[in-house]
Length: 95
Image (cartoon, rainbow, N blue to C red):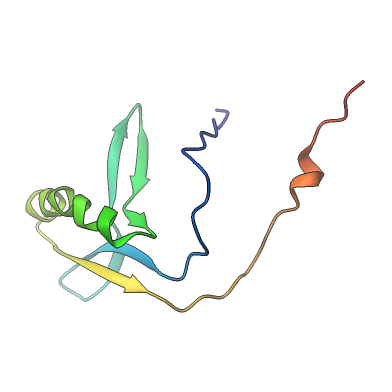
């Protein structure tokens, strides 16, 4: 299945932190929460903006209620760049 890329606007600033909703099971294991978007598409509940994370809290509460697990909102601020693409590599040559 091809992936469709949709850009929602210009990049605003360097990302210095990420906010993620994680579930915690009874053994202390953690996993990233995701919401269903339809047609089998799942969206991880991760954002670089705290105001967006605040708006996601009702969905996180639904996940906790339905899954019976604790859900936490965490902020991660350590950054290590592990990989990057070269956009010029993907440009098609015009004939």
